Image 1 (spheres, rainbow, N blue to C red):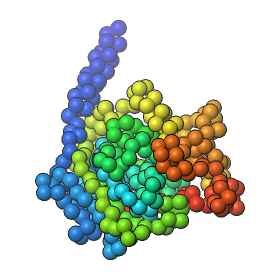
Image 2: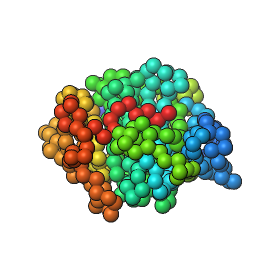
Image 3: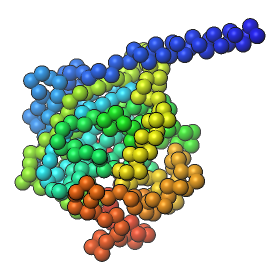
Image 4: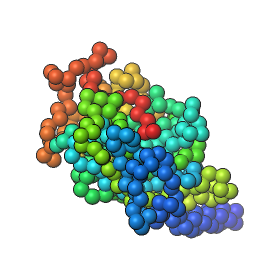
Length: 347
């Protein structure tokens, strides 16, 4: 009995300690100069007078970008982004974590890639998770958004812990990648820096490269604000304590209500998921994909594209999800050749 009471006391102390640690995690925005530095683009990177926001521009000459001053080993990273409007086909705005500069052959990466489109068509959002150079086993997903991202800023955030990666849009989870043993090195585990860029993705970003950047509409400008760097600095000497802070923070805890909200978002807005792409990976099912009874499979084509989600529901030009007569079909078994699948790095 005494031993059991002692064990319970130890457990309670641990819970209290973890809760106190979680409360100390600071997720307030930081000034640009405090957490970031320019990466490329020279005067295509424009800081606001108060130093709290940054405009990234793409023109014929160059794109632009910035990078965190510190690499982080897990944490919560967020930016509010307002995207350019008008004709933005081929334009890619990215907010992501990567260590490709340190591990060029076996890098880790966690991405938000915001993909421009033709005038009158919606921006699309892609999330990627790569570990240990696993771009050939890409964990890509693609979504429409329940709002127009060109009218005002919206928050895009990544919560990266030792056990999961969760993507958030405006505080609502849209994707959870849970680390399972079978993933091995495919789960990102090495310290990463935080990046933001705008660049020319004409080769793949809009209908597989069919629509390229039209610089008659340049410059294209994306505004970044409310920059949050709530992470564990690599080599900081307190990574264990910081990992506890991250894993017990609100953004890392997926409650039943949050998972229900995530399922609703995905059912309404998910365009493509690697979990149901049976062509690209020749029937391979990724170990973290959760559809044990196959109940979702009927909602997707063999190439992982949704049968349910259509741009036309919000007044945009209809983009049929079935292969059309004017859409070439590849010889591998039926995926439209215009669907942009591949190693989609944001650098």
